[in-house]
Image (cartoon, rainbow, N blue to C red; front, side, top):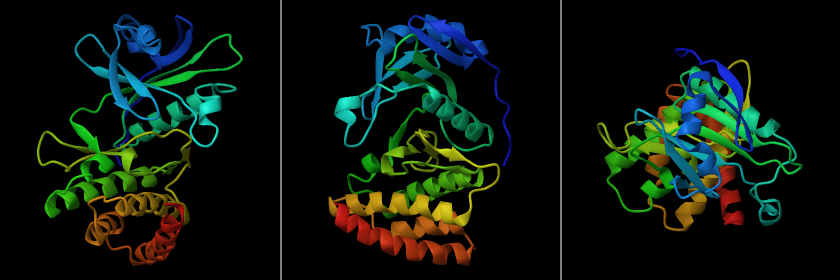
Length: 271
């Protein structure tokens, strides 16, 4: 896997935020309206939806940047919302995302991270270069598409996840919305990206098989849950994914087969 060089990072103040950003982009991010976008100002564009709507700004030269605000999920999300006890979680994702990108993993390039200064309840954001002309797998499979296009999308997603695992990264929440496939520049679905590395963990070497299987089982539970809701994906697509991910690794395929069977049962319980 080809290693890419990482730009130097500098810490600066941006309004009420402390920001660590690629040194060459600090001023450009602020001039492009980063502070206004984080405040929801009228000059800020809007990006895709996750738990909350993301901000979007455009740097001089036309490069688009997505500003993802950190927000709690789970049972107490409405209570805790976007408030955290510190900024270590934000920094950890920034460092893991940069390391994964540098290792050649197809994931958005993280260029800045920031957190609110001087407050007990800390809010944070992550800035990444926008991936254009792409859809997440849940959106892609919401409507019937041809088998070749489905297989292209799942194969490219498998290659992206295999690249992530080979770089030693275990995704904390691998599901269909955290996989994007390209729609332009060639055949639709021929390239894929893994997004949202919040709470991901990175090892020094490649991810062990047990950790890989756990990640894949989490993704498969997401597939099974949405298949029950009418998602247009079948067992042939799952086989195409496994073929791409495991290749000639028969032992890995056997381990995955057992784990996916258990994941299928869990998906039925939790639907």
